[in-house]
Length: 156
Length: 207
Ligand SMILES: Nc1nc2c(ncn2[C@@H]2O[C@H](COP(=O)(O)OP(=O)(O)O)[C@@H](O)[C@H]2O)c(=O)[nH]1
Ligand SMILES: [Mg+2]
Image (tube, rainbow over all chains, first blue to last red; front, side, top):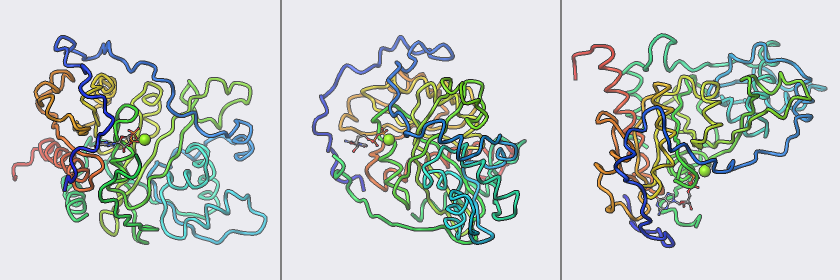
């Protein structure tokens, strides 16, 4: 593990980083807000018009039910004449696939993907397995679940 | 630079188990270039994928936009990988920038997240102040991971803690995001922390 320590070849050595001890109390004021480090990535070149077309301008009535990690399973095969995004989702979800993976695969924003999924759920073409990490009330998941995750990570 | 990865065993797992039914989230936040994608790649069973979310200032999905008001839309890109924990549980790791517009989307994207890793480069600690503020504000448990860019010995943990104004109870660990075992160690540190918090919150006496 942690083989080949260095690697940081061109790392202009010890720039007088921070440790200006005084700045300690960042608390809520945070003088050091991330300097508008210009929007790392501009996003894809989907124009709003294209997004509007994909969803036919529908609103997100039932789409809020879909978490980023809700697992989606197809319950039917794509039908002829179906909107291409709908068909693509059904082909993709032979095995369970998370909402965020579907969005990445379609190259569409998550919010648009949620609307497409709501369409399919409403017509019974998919089923959705929602996360049960933390019941609304409790802040943290059960220790039992966390223990399972630990075991899984250690076995990686 | 991309070839630097030491042990990038591409344990490609094409699809989840048919019985998978519980998705979990962990978020890795940090400034640009701090190693978020690298860390995700080191432990993920899939090559990291990229996606984005778009919102209006009012906090509504882009779908509700009247087509003329799209100028107010905010787009945030993030990448992710996944780890199958067992036949039913799958952990998704999100690498996300800590910039301001990202936090605007936090509730919509990352509510219900187990916890977060704040990845820091000790040469640029100020980049993570804002992320730490926001996590504290949201009450999301987190650990801090110092990604080792070859300068690990230049600052003691105590110095880093002070510069970050990091409370004693927040765990800190040093890692090399390119190394699978080391990246695993960061996640284990976080989940151990969550476990401790969860048992304490439940007033559990055992362990
Ligand atoms: N020396 C060194 N380089 C790293 C480490 N982690 C990431 N890098 C390199 O830093 C650069 C930025 O990493 P990346 O994961 O893309 O950063 P991100 O913007 O936070 O996603 C890449 O060239 C990585 O190979 C590390 O632990 N040590
Ligand atoms: Mg990245």
